[in-house]
Length: 108
Image: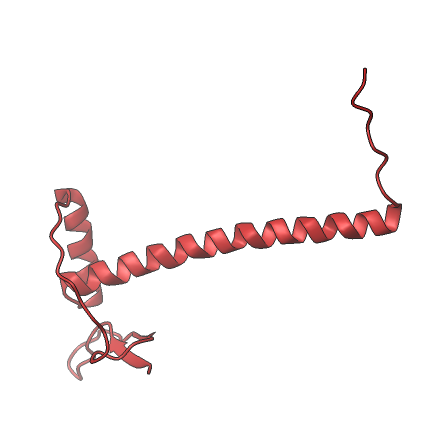
């Protein structure tokens, strides 16, 4: 089930814009765990600034930022795999067009 999560409230008296993001799980079905961690003050200040800008709380800001970082990392990994597949296919195409490459002798 997909739900929409408001990333900031739009009020008639406010000039803020509402951003919505689809989330692939309902609030009822989502299991959560509490974690405790130490965060450098500078990083926490950046998280708080992001949360204020987006009109969300700190927890939501951390979840959004971590999710974006993980999605970005997965995309880069997937891109690397796609490049390997492309290069393999390109090698096959070159071999079909030009014939097999001559084997090099291992003797000197």
